[in-house]
Image 1 (cartoon, rainbow, N blue to C red):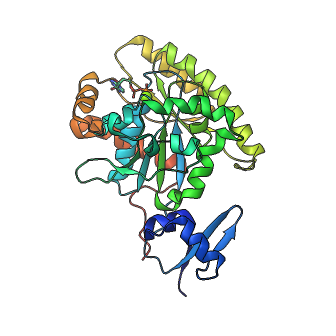
Image 2: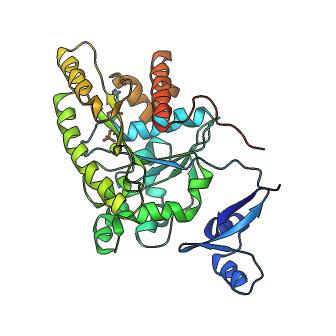
Length: 329
Ligand SMILES: Nc1ncnc2c1ncn2[C@@H]1O[C@H](COP(=O)(O)OP(=O)(O)O)[C@@H](O)[C@H]1O
Ligand SMILES: [Mg+2]
């Protein structure tokens, strides 16, 4: 039997180059077969060779600045992409560090290429390819003007789920295995919209008293986010806790204080899964930023081993078997 797959109309338009309005006209005139599910139209496409993406969306989240959200988006994204998963990174921070750190110049990014497009009702912009050698990593970039979203989101009905619905509508869930969203260091509207776009939060926790303090607030707001998603029927009642993975960062095993922080982390391990820690290594992280590369590319073997362990922990958390995803012919 031939496999049929439903491609969202917008994605079909992107692929074929036929404008969406023209496609809608064809559908109305009966010249193009389309299926309506909920609010959206889909085009049944026969015998597509491509494997369906896993479509798993997670948000790097904590209002603590400098905890390692952006580094984690870049380096976990790279780790998963290196294993053959199709990865999309979304820069939801007007500071646009993720964009810059992946070798793109935020000052050359147009507003319509950022999440501002989503917030203003124009849908998800097409991703760009990060200029990396050998590994495909896609990115929806940011620029400074994304800060305007902070004032626009609260004026929209269901503004907080705009990114979630845009992801559903755009076809990226079918095109990618993992979508990682880097959020700004706040609990404001953009951070909320980023958090509500996924199935859960991945929270970097700086291994210090300050980091653990921030985590308590994150756990509290995450319960509100989960409640909101449940009430809108975006999450089942039996979904796991919204904070899905804690990643201890900047861990320096030599200091007593950090050992105490680790002990604290172990205490809260019942509330969320804790991954292996990422060590404190200022030199390679600085070099990574300077060269616009993931830290594994500039770092040593021990650092790469840290990220392999983190990748394993992440995949265990999502319930995906380790190793490459199976290709369906
Ligand atoms: N494990 C680490 N060791 C040393 N420096 C780190 C580490 N992780 C991140 N950094 C550095 O700390 C700073 C803050 O990290 P960043 O990823 O920007 O955090 P956030 O996005 O949460 O603000 C950056 O300069 C980054 O290069
Ligand atoms: Mg950041």
